[in-house]
Image (cartoon, rainbow, N blue to C red; front, top):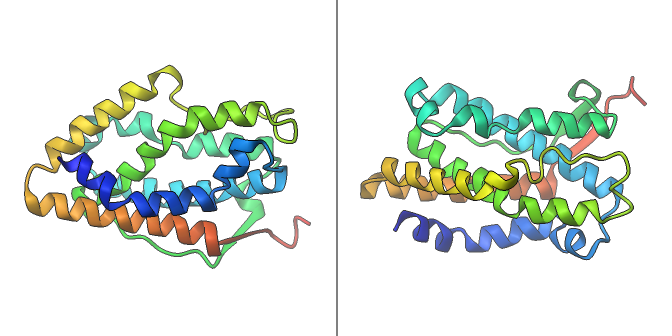
Length: 201
């Protein structure tokens, strides 16, 4: 029930994020290196902020229940950035929105967005591997990060999310934060700017 509600409530947000994240260009093979780099950097900002807050909000028991340590993706994005010859210290992130995660229900709502995105990651990776503008010297650590375990990771998350969202109040908070998280990512993709620090140029 919770997952059906989440999927229905966030469908428009999901479609908008896909549009802004170059989904069509990835699928038809026309995404270029500048667009891919921008996407990786904005994914990094998005995941870093959320993972940092999750690390503070979740108890050790909750982290274990949600398998949080194996779901973290910031380091994978750092590897992708290094392949682009970019490090966080070289960059300035401006016009970025904010998102607050205050409790376990917020955490589940945000993680629904993060974990749901991995379902299409394997398809995205396959398309990027066939794109000659992107493929050379690129390993793609972030996309397709769970490999053959993608389905299992998602099923386990659904199970735990359902356990935590076991009453009406919790479910409303989870759905509200999932929508907030999609809108947060949408605004990063639409308005956020990433530039090289002056001393790096």
